[in-house]
Length: 340
Image (cartoon, rainbow, N blue to C red; front, side, top):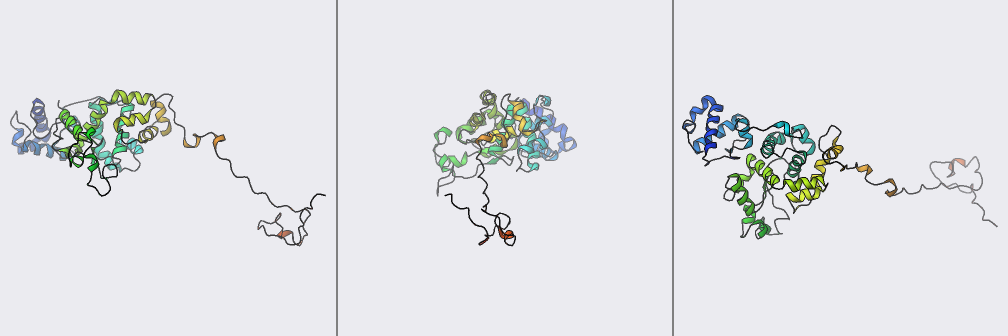
């Protein structure tokens, strides 16, 4: 089964999709002639039928059939029991405290299906995927990169700093903006758009905005992590979370992945979750990260003034040794005489 199918696709998998779609639409399938004839590629009419079905089941109607749609149409299947972490809105929301739960509920099924198809179901890769989303698009929505000081010079054209980045495959003015970061993984550069577009069967080089389609964005995230899975798992086992993050985006060093893993849902509490994933890597709570001896000592308390002789009863209330108001008592307290 092709991992992604959209307008223009034609194969035996498209024929399976036609039959499954006709069955799912029921009587409505008669409204789309393309679903009545076998061997039909995904043309305009077929695409309209896909969008009709997607909207009817609460999916985003973009005409792209990926792992999430194929799972609902019973075209593919994977064992959800292999996931070492339970992916639901409640657990994932704990890792995204500033994100709307509605966004997580809408896009998390796409992520789960793509990770399942790619067999990235172990704890390290699940947390790596969520940590990448948190670092790149915290709103849990596949978006396009915005202008910033990292891609746009002061007073210059947007993304013009990317125009001549040969490492990204960009070679002419306008390439920076055209092939800017998109999707959950923020795919960037002409080379990446060309290479990954060919692998998933979507012409991303000519239509780069397709990288923001939920099915495409989820598959790109899973495929990108799958390419680096061996090194990623090794870095996690060694406790080198900065290196794990660097494998995904070497240009943006951050400790997001570390915070994601240390806050992962766990029966033992959020701070013990990472210890369950990596034996020996036990992050200390913030209040225990420095030994007590290394903490700055408090300033010594100010000593109270003392009188050499007892104050008279009349002025005792004004004496600094007996009054909280600390008023000076005049001519009642005599200083201690100097030693002879």
